[in-house]
Length: 254
Figure 1 (cartoon, rainbow, N blue to C red):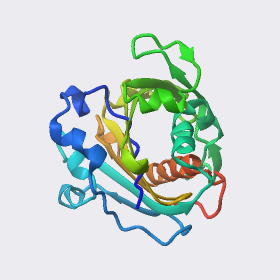
Figure 2: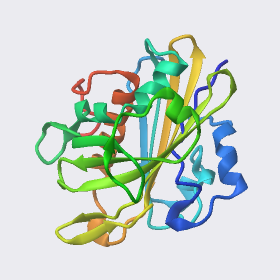
Figure 3: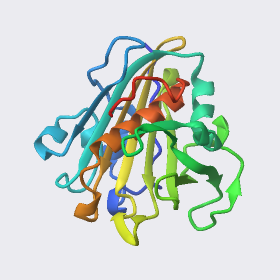
């Protein structure tokens, strides 16, 4: 069995700016065992706010910091694709292609573009656009950065991305926001408070298991109550990364 695990790490920093610890780094080689559905079946999605339930989630021990007040979202699937390991890494590094991702808006009850702008940037302190990351760029394992503008907030947010590629097709990906997420002039999520780990496992040539786990820690109660939006956005990214058309019915959450 070949395992592809993708992790966009947080610039050697854990959530809330805490330095990365050895246990966190071993997540790149962790034995993640979520409850996968059958191949090409709809993804299995779970959302929880309960700390005791979250602790039991596969990959939850990779997160540092408090567990309370968090929203946890997991997506598990097995799909057949045309990607080999290099193509999958290139897909992950093609930041500009995120503009083609669609999610189901529960507010509009319609399909909506996930982001209006998306591009790689030179660094956290030099947000000038640059070309998409190549497979070699990501495989180097260094901390990289990109910027996206959500179509709902219309604010550009910078993110950290770092990939760890293991043997036999393993990739581990960890992403987090380095800018606060604001709306109405209010900070909904502070820096590094929305973090997602991706574990993609190549079970056989072209067949991948996909697992993502997101933890979002709100800065205010105004950020609560958006579980369906979290689900739909997480599934939108899943579909985008594995090459499934973004407007595929049925929507994950109406």
